[in-house]
Image (cartoon, rainbow, N blue to C red):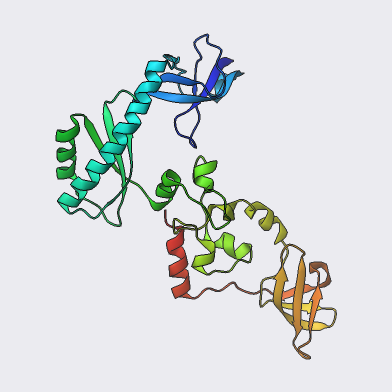
Amino acid sequence: MAEIIGVRFKSVGKIYYFSPAKNKLNVGEKVIVETSRGVECGEVVLSNREISDDELTAPLKDIIRIATKKDLDKIEQNKKNETEAFKICEEKIAKHGLNMKLVDVECTFDNNKLLFYFTSENRVDFRELVKDLASVFRTRIELRQIGVRDEAKMLGGLGICGRPFCCKSFLGDFQPVSIKMAKDQSLSLNPAKISGTCGRLMCCLKYEQDGYEELIKGLPKIGAVVDAPDGKGNVVDINILTGKIRVKNLDTEAVNTYTKDEIKVLKDGINKINNEELKELKDLEDK
């Protein structure tokens, strides 16, 4: 067993384990630690506890120290530097005529590096921009191109549900979301209704997918030919949550409602999406 604390460096992000170095730490305290990016300041999100050695993926590092007032003042100064760097970088982007949108700037705790995050529809040759920025800030410069999902996670905002973005609130990592999930949940395949502010499929489609997959087991598809109590018919509608299936009789054209136990599938239907619609929807899956 090893005694650890959990430290997070962003409001919503991965939790990293460190040794408390004989300190008793509470949730919310700031600590200075060494990471692969250098010396950083993080927030304790898991207080002292013991875990098995099997749960550790790398050698456990000790924290350097509990953050002092001087450290916290340095963080505040870094935030001011980031704001200034953002303005300067935008001016340099315009000067070089680059097709890129600056999203965020991050200054490492030890001021050894400035990271500029941007989005762009194409690859960008920013070598001259890096040289220009390095001459201004006299430190290491790194530009990172990110996707629209990452942009939404950084900037935040309100979803169509009226709540803050899930990715900004609690999602540590993005989960794969597919058009199949929207179809399984009988949602409209209108891109405007199933995509988030980022322009990609809504992350919340993933939340109930396991439940829907369980519910649709044994249910026929729309268009299936079934043998019902009043004769053969075609499935015209399915309510996945109630398990009710509406069948149109082939002879009388009367529409009646049954459960899956009351009918027998003779020929299942096929879920069809035309190629144009499929291409437009597939674009929503890209990160």
